[in-house]
Amino acid sequence: MDALHALIVLANFVIVPAIAYGSQLALGALGITLIVGVLRFSNFAHGETMAFGTMVVILVTWWFQSIGLSIHPLPTALIALPFGILGCIAIVLLTDKFVYKFYRKTKSSPVVLVMASLGVTFIMNGVIRFVIGPGDQRFADGQRFIMKAREFKEMTGLKEGLAIKVTQSITLVTAIIIVAALFWFLNRTRTGKSMRAFSDNEDLALLSGINPERVVTITWIIVAILATVAGTLYGLDKTFKPFTYFQLLLPMFAAAVVGGLGNPVGAIVGGFVIAFSEILITYAYKKVFTYLLPSDFAPNTLIQLLSTDYKFAVSFAILVLVLLFRPTGLFKGQST
Amino acid sequence: MNENPFLIGDSMTGGYGKGADILHNCTVAVNKGEIAVIVGPNGAGKSTAMKAIFGMLDMHTGSVQIDGEDITNLSPQDRVAKGMAFVPQNQNIFTSLSVEENLEMGAFLRNDDISQTMAQVFDLFPILKEKRKQAAGELSGGQRQQVAVGRALMTEPKVLMLDEPTAGVSPIVMDELFDRIIEVARTGISILMVEQNARQALSIADKGYVLVQGENRFTDTGTNLLADPEVRKSFLGG
Image 1 (cartoon, rainbow over the protein chains, first blue to last red):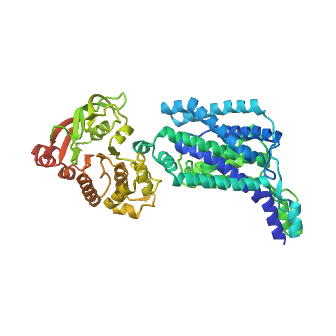
Image 2 (tube, rainbow over the protein chains, first blue to last red):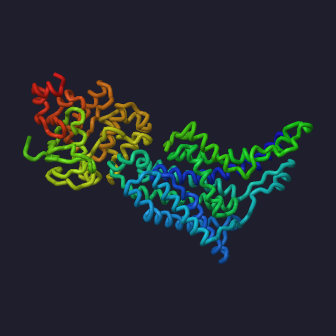
Image 3 (cartoon, rainbow over the protein chains, first blue to last red):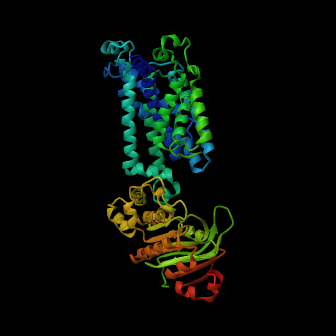
């Protein structure tokens, strides 16, 4: 019985949140990995791309709320999502046209593109703060829980509760749909295959008559969709704050590198590896051990490996370890 | 040789970017349905001549014509649309794509039904049909070359250009590949090929070009070149 209680505590505070967070990271890392695969640079502006898309979603959500449009019990943000995606597609395509295209034409080295993306980061950062402000924005409405902790306790008669938020389940369902659609596109459609071919061997893709600019445009569109969805899901699950989205860059890159840069399957696995590591290492296990150990041995400290303030150190440590010992990642990606 | 070869790179002079000229007044041509082979010592500009014909080189004099049409200023991609197909020496397949996907990508420019062409490629290289769901990068060297040639054939080209198709494969696989290349030529596709294995290549060639330092040194039919004592002594090891 105590073991079951310990398991429920773990599920409530570690497994369920980590699955939701992992899905969000996976979607973000997929965007990063696609850009590495096709455009061959690490896009530091990915966090801002997510923030921009999410910002548009929030603005449209507020407008919908003001005119009383709602899909209760689901959050209004879901119907605002397509608008956010369109806004995000517009901004990334404009950025590509005015910034990245030039460096592509001059065949600049990847590091030049990375630095350019850093510049894009700062500008987008400013624009976002200018429009929506630097503070926290809550935009989740609709029903909050699918199952409250109290309901779970009443239902099962156990002492510990398991709460599942609506946003967590939306995150998981949306992530599965988006990922399935992405893999269908990459593996089954001619355009998707041409993207993979271009990523695999650019010169041969050109010899086969694959139009590089078209591949690049489609990649940006897909990246914008992934980024906006990831950002909106994260914002619904937690809150929207521009700086938090900038900080997400580290775990997302760590996820992409762990899985192997340029490898979509790797990005998904990497997202969950990072999410679980971060939460497992920063979780305080006192309650779990209280259930598991005899009462004489019950811990009187938090049993927390690392304070949550240091959660980014986890991603960073994993990133360094992977780069040292397996630079191509778990699923053979590029090592650059 | 008749007066108007199907594909000709005429009096080509040029090099890569702003570097020194590699080709000097070099001419290479191939007739319809024939096999032309470019041989010569290392650094003779064999591959460079091939790339020049395919538009991957900065040429300052000379011209390239296909079927009487001047294509000197076309990009490599546009030349593919004109019926040329090129199999590079290295990295000539999409390693992470399946064999079938490699062939599909070869036919990317086509909007018609490609299943018939794919069946022809599978007839030519039966092993590829067996392994069509497998990632091309997992195949052996000889099989990879078959994928590479197959990919190029998917555009239904009029000219197939091969840059050292037998590099790094065993002698048995090499003979096999040469047999397939002859089969391809019999279907009316002209073949222009660069080869290290000069003796075997010349023996299947209708036309042979011996290049030295970017210039034509000997040009004749394959049989005549093989019989020429000077060519034998200098380039075929006696």
